[in-house]
Amino acid sequence: MKDQNNILRDQITPPPVYFNRRNFIRAGVLAASAVATGVVYRKLNHVSTTKVKTAAIQDLTRATHAPANSGFTVNEPETPFEDITHYNNFYEFSTDKQAVADASANFQTKGWQVTVGGLVNKPRVFSLEDILKIAPPEERIYRMRCVEAWSMVIPWVGYSLSKLLEVVEPTSEAKYVAFETLLDPTRLPGQRSDVLKWPFVEGLRLDEAMHPLAILASGLYGRALPPQDGAPIRLVVPWKYGFKGIKSIVKITLTADQPQTTWSEDAPDEYGFFANVNPRKDHPRWSQATEQRIGESGRRPTLMFNGYEEQVGHLYAGMDLRANF
Amino acid sequence: MKENDIRFAKLLVLVNSAVPAALLGWDAWHHELGANPVNFAILTTGLMALIFLMLTLAVTPLRKITGLNWLISFRRMLGLYAFFYACAHFLIFFSLDRGFSVSSTLHEIIKRNYLWLGIIGLLVMVPLAVTSTNAMIKRLGGKRWRTLHRLAYVAAVAGVIHYYMQVKADVRQPLVFAAVLAILLGYRLMVYLNPSKSAPATTAAARPKIEA
Image 1 (cartoon, one colour):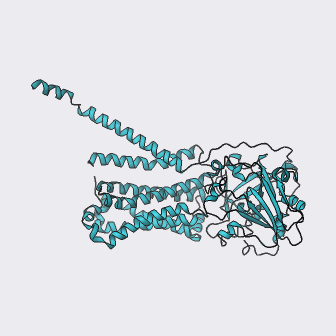
Image 2 (cartoon, rainbow over the protein chains, first blue to last red):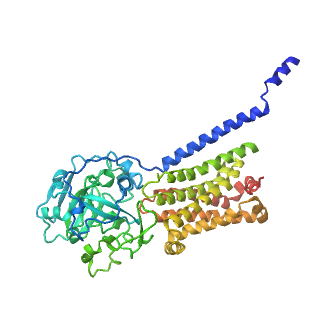
Image 3 (tube, chains in turn cyan, red):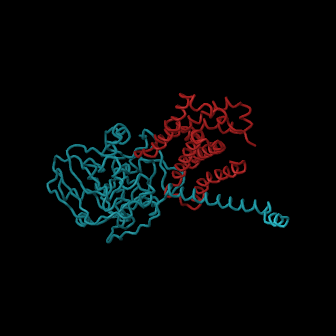
């Protein structure tokens, strides 16, 4: 008995060791929980990292050849390719701008067609190859001002929309041009939710559409458009808020009446049909006087018509731009 | 739970609650917040403030339903983290977005309803943070302290509406917060309307616990 008691006493872990082991386990639990929280944070607060590599566009006319005062180029630093391709408003993929690049990485555009019709003399279904052949690709370096008060400078590749319209010949009744994005919830998963009415529709007045600054873009930075920026073909209207630049176009229709466009239908008091960039007309919920230029610190003043007043101001002569926003 | 285990559990909450702030800082330092880092940081800290407000308001219902009274020992810390993230949220807006311009910040706040709500939510949390110490609980007395700290409901409601109002079209996330908040406040309303049911368990534990 005596011996046994002695042995037992010897086997008891001395208090310092016992507490050390417990502290050791606790330190492990603490570290593991912190790592787990970090993983959850990363999952929920995800930033797309997909790398983009699309084909280079041949025989490109550089913007350095642009006529003076055309507005075809701008003397401001271009926004990095990484930012243009990883900060996208493209609700058909995700409403999170930083998630679009990953969500759109496998988007297929094979066999793409664009149907051009309505009030035209020569309606036609174009294959992508045919529509790209209408005019030689030009580089256009434009400011892009989002209605959310951030902006970029983007070297697009495309040609003036007017060249396409000249091919299909709008009739004398045609007053507007309506554009539609592809409707395909399997390829555009965002269309499975009803955050907006699908398909996305945008529109221009015919004289706006005929302005040389309005382009059909098929590339940026000298390469074919990546999916997140509206592959394979999109509209760019640099004096208007970015949402007017409808992406992944499958249909262009000339109409007599003003088309019902997606954002202005969703919130008519916040987004008008014209959506011209106007620092003096605030969005009801935020100011449009300044903008966050992506890649810069601090804010820049926003310019009337996004700095293209000289080129497009005459289109709106005598119009109340605060009422017709 | 033993006193020692509660202390460790509090350490767990303390460290894990700081992880988002630490990762946000780390990513900012390495330029990995994406194309619009200021916006990203404002959004992230705002979301964290809302999450911690919800966690804070979840403590009492969870404690009453499960009977795990030690849960109360996390409430103060969770509340202070909500205040910390809300302050960070405002300070990033003031410094990096508004360029430290008091006039531009005030101008924006006065003009925009959603910023009004955000500021109300932040300001009502100030007295709560100030009176969160044991000494202040003693000085105010439990009953007055509890009444004052109902301002947390105001902060949460203001915060959720503030978030809802600035979203462009996809209101799913703000609606999730609204639903959670409705449950948490609905529970309190239910208890208030049926005091008999939960009264015996409540009185002792609802008192803010004073600890060393």
